[in-house]
Image (tube, rainbow, N blue to C red; front, side, top):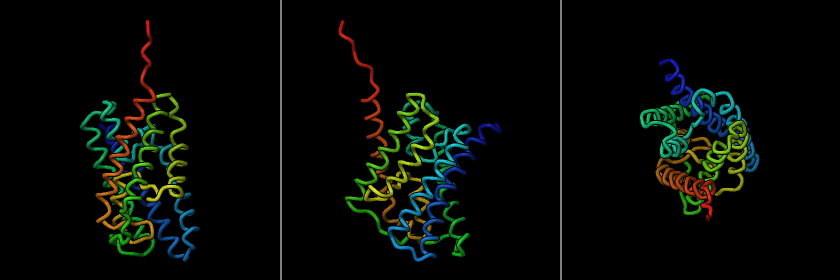
Length: 223
């Protein structure tokens, strides 16, 4: 039982750290009155570094999903049972909310704030599909080829890079998107944009799963 609870808490803690980082970095850019370009670099690096650390330390405990669509694709492949995947997702959303509360409080704001940035556009939707599909495909292929030790670095670098090349700045995670709706930091999101972002993320994950099957299917040998 303790082992099972540790897995659930690991998913909660990892997601909390990610959201606390992206929201906290957003508040820091505001306090410093940073140029938008400098602010984007600060947030991207902070999130990339924390992803590396969180995945490295918690992957042996829960697999370090920290992302409902990652849990979803593993559940679809029956690599995680339905009950565990359901609790993982709940833990991830609770962790995301907690991370926003902690970051807001840390900077002297009310624990829960309303996100102001309305981010949903056709371009941002496509950006989220690309950001999420790349993230999930990286994880699936590294696991498939027994290169799990590379996941922390690869995921951290992909998400950091996504801040620069995707139109959505690479949320790529429904739980993190949800958590970022509870802050008015520059890294927040208006609640009205959340459903569209989540839909793009689910679509991106399913696209990644399709690409994974195409890339790894065994070739039929002609006799």
